[in-house]
Structure formats: structure tokens, C-alpha cells
Length: 228
Image 1 (cartoon, rainbow, N blue to C red):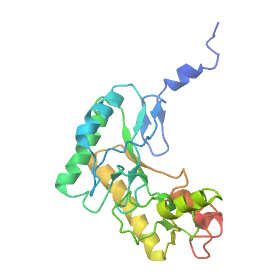
Image 2: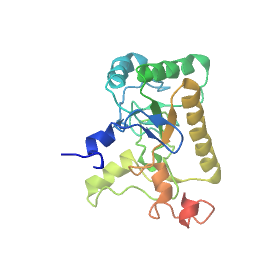
Image 3: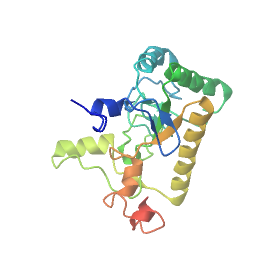
Image 4: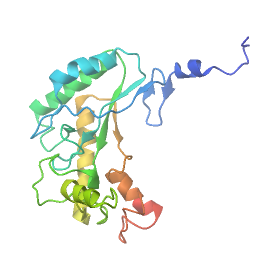
């Protein structure tokens, strides 16, 4: 039988509030992880509020400590899949920002904080997923293509779907940094509780971290500090 000096059970710990390093306090430690929703429509890929009403209302009343949105891309040219929501150059315009505000309101109406996951797929952006022209290549820290396998079918699929990415220029890097900043501003102005940067799944940020995909010799390559 537990005593007053016994450590709390796992269930008890999960139900306790926790304050994150950023200062955000969660009512408990259960988190709805980001999942790909693929409901947005081009060419702007704004939040599909009519679809999100039921989805995020359900999550909002499910007693999570935190909701993380599905990935939100920061560049309409480079989506990870058709249907990604995108934070773009017009997202701070009143009408479009209104959609973001409604999304934040729905997600947080029962008191659970919700943060936006911001992403850029880098070389993992397939042809046809965004609005980039056919001749525009996906981006990567260095010109390192994805490897799907060694058969002719693997190589054909790679060439047609992903191709060989373009090694990013300093201007490209600066532009992407600005787009992440814009995404954070949109999340803040819309009333979300914060933003999370997508650094997994071989997307752009993890491509910079990896010595395999980041072979740069400038300020963004080489040492771990530069790659970060």
C-alpha cells in the first residue's frame, strides 16, 4: 500500500501540471502529437476551418494537456504532401489571419493550449505537392538526393517524384529563416499558445543537422554548432 513517502505513480505524474522552459504551463502531461491532416486546398493552402471544426473540437474536449497542430509548411512552393496547411506571404492579411484566429479559438475553446508545428520538407518535397514550377528543384543544404533503392524502378521513381535537390544559397537560407519567423508571428497573432519547429523525418532542419545531407563549408556547415 502506498505511503506518504512513496513516489507518485506514472498515472499520477501524467495528471500533474508542468511548466515548459518557454513558460507555458500545461494542465497535464498528455500531448496530442502533430499528425498530417492533408485537408487544405491550393493555391493558398489556408486552414480549412469547416473541416477543422469537428476535428479540433473533438481534440479540444479530450482533456489533453497540449495540442500540437498537424505540420504547417512555411512555403507554398515546397509542401511535403498535397493538402498541407501553409503559412504564406498573405497569412497576416486580415481575412486570412481570421481563419488562423478561428482555428486557434476552436482548438483552445475548452482551455487546452495549442501550438503550431512549423515545417519545411527540404529535399523531401515531391513534385506537384506545392505551387512551384516543374523546373524548380526542392531545396537541401547540399546537392544530395534521397536514395530509395538500387533498382531501375527505384531510380525512376526518385527522378520523377523527388529528383536531385538544389544546394541552398545563403539567400535561400535567409529566406527560409524569414519564413519560419513569419510562421511564428502568424501563430502568435492568431492566438495560439506557441510554435514548434519540425526537426524530424529528414525534413530541412534535420538535413542541416546531418553530415550526410549537409556538406557545406560555409557558416552553415562543418561543426555541430554551424549545422545547428
